[in-house]
Amino acid sequence: MIPLPYLTVYRISGADAADFLQAQLAGDITGLEEGQSCFAAWCSPRGQVIALLLLCREAEDWLVVGEEHLARTVFKRLPMYVLRARVSFKHLAGHWLAGVPQGPVAVACSRVFAPAHSPLRYAVVTTPPLCPASTGREQLDRWRAEELKHGVVWLQPATSERFLPQMLGLERIGAVSFSKGCYPGQEIVARTRYLGLLKRKPVLLEIDGSVPVTAGAPCRLHSEGQVLDAVAIDSAMGETGRSFVLAVAPLEESAAVDSLEITGRVWPSRRLAVALEN
Image (cartoon, rainbow, N blue to C red; front, side, top):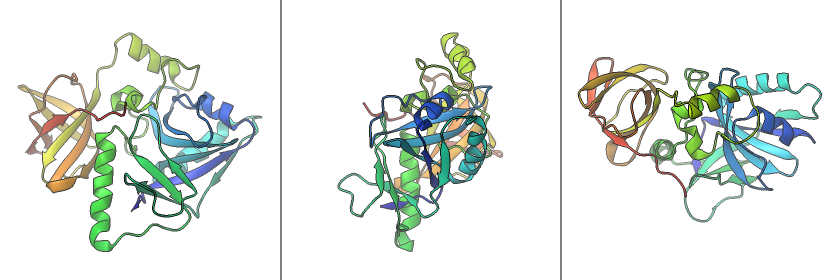
């Protein structure tokens, strides 16, 4: 198993927990049964994604995974919307997140998340997962690269509340539904989709070598003779010394990218399609 120190987990409990989450999140959780999980975005009233969350149902309780730093903000703000609902929140401080490679789970886990629309599996464990120092960083980088290649975008404080879900491609992993009822920002998210107003889209790049990407930093994409302003979202090193970079730019899905420019330096790049689970 691969330790994922950038993630943390909370428990949301109470008889009204499912209704509360359904009303707050852009993803549709109503069909989840015991042990099933899915991604869901939590949006601001302006439709911008505050955070990506991963949820797993446990009877009336829900385990909710989020990016470590953003989760502190999310779980300070979410209780403000509870009102009279029977809902409580608890940070599971004695639990850790791990990535689960394909194959049998080798250690005891309190829960394994196998989210819909994704081949990736996550585990909640009560003993910190350990990796040899010589391989731990490499395994973590590869896992994060797999997340980017499969459309999983863990926003950070620098990129929170800056993008609509479609700008990050979150509909592709089921983190936003266009058929469910109201949630914060739903009108703006739906109008952008159905009126064709989306100008910026996610662009996944593969680059030979290491690229110094800072989340939320401005960058430029060179595409078919154009130079387009973009925003870097995240990056990770994959196998054989290749970097994977996700950016948001005003670029159609069919357009190729020749290179990525950051702080005046240019890296030849190849645009990739996100690998989706059927």
